[in-house]
Image (cartoon, rainbow, N blue to C red; front, side, top):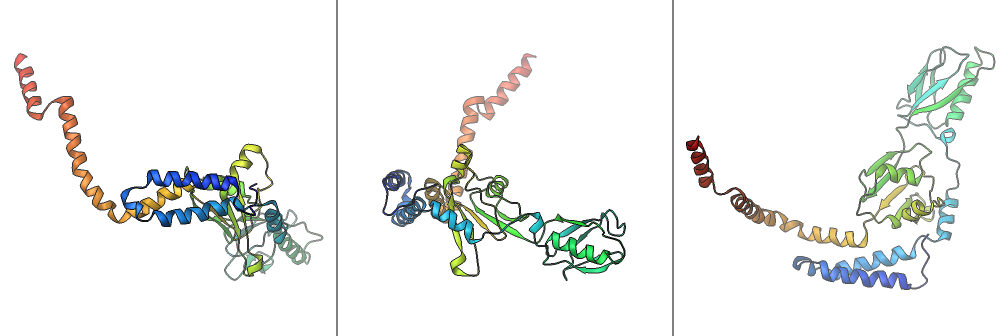
Length: 292
């Protein structure tokens, strides 16, 4: 967990000075015109990273949305699919159905049953009540067969970004393991955002993945909720490299067009040095043929 900063700590200052030296030594002529902007943005990134993610933030983040989340409390919506197990009711036992857009499933003996907006426990209770007209104390268990209606999101320096299916059992480590942060990822500054329509309920924490993996301390391995956003930022050095690449983007096609003929010519010279010219090769082949 990163310590909070009342002012700029020595660690932040040292990190900032190191980044200034990196920027001065690695930026090209094209990038130097925008170095001031890069340094200003990088300064804000390093400062915020060092000052976020206190223990108090984590506690507030978890308590702000203190809900029990499991498959038994997952709210079914279209187009999720449910599976019904009712050993004493052959008409519905073993049936799997996708919830229609109107929120209903169609079952033998029971007809249309509205299940959208209910948990699996509530759906089971509803089916049991309806089956009680035909069976004595029927046993009914319902589970989600396919999660298709709810998502959380992963962005940034990962191999597999985008929306991920929310199951009610998704943890931060599970989400990151599936998304696979790449070599540019700043693993100690991963941001988890919990959106809300109410402004004062929107929460953000900074999670140190390296600490969790190295120490085994899973206190920050938050259970995700629907709509959560995971942002994996680049390291400060990677951020500078990406900005320089962005600055070079308009002139990159011109540089490529200029370098391609030179590369081809260099390859030709290398071939001649290794194998001789094409004329020499022909003569060598002819002389070898004559000797035969």
